[in-house]
Image 1 (cartoon, helix red, strand yellow):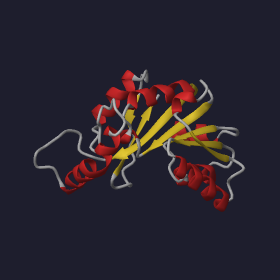
Image 2 (image 1 turned 60 degrees about the vertical axis):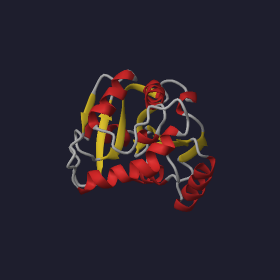
Image 3 (image 1 turned 180 degrees about the vertical axis):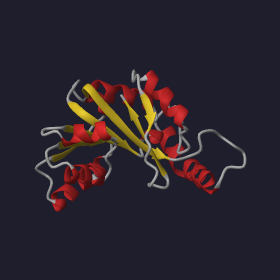
Length: 192
C-alpha cells in the first residue's frame, strides 16, 4: 500500500483507529510510524481504559490517546488515514459509522478496513474457514450486532461486495481489495 504508507510516514500524520478495543492496533501504528499521532476510539469504556494502560506500558502514551465515543462525534477533516480492524461486521449501523469516518478524513485520506477473508460469495459447500466464520458469526458477532436495534445484522461473514456497498452508501467513491495475502484469516480493503 505505497500511498497509505507514504501518508503514514509523513511527519504529523493523524491516524484514527476506529473500534480500537484494547489499543494494540493503535500502539502498533504508533510504533511503526513515530512521526504520527494516533487517536483510538471505541464505544466500550472498559476497553478504552485497558487501551490507555496498554499504551502507557508500551511507552507511546505521548502520541496515542483513546476516547470512549462514537465516530460520529469527531470533527470533519481531522485525520489523514483511518483504520477499522476487524470491527465493521460487528457494527449495527456500519453505513453510519463509515459515513462519520469519511467526514473525518482530510482530502485525499483513506480508510483501511481489515476483516475476515471469507469467500467472495456464498456456496453451500464452503471450506473450513467459511464454516468456522459462520460459527463465530452465529454465536458471537451477529448477536452482538443485533443487540442494538435497528441493525443491519452483518455478522462475521461479510463479503467484499457487502463492504463495497456499505462504502458506496457512506459516500466513498473508491474501493479496492488490497493485495495482502500473508495474513491468513484476514482481508484488507482501502476505501477513499
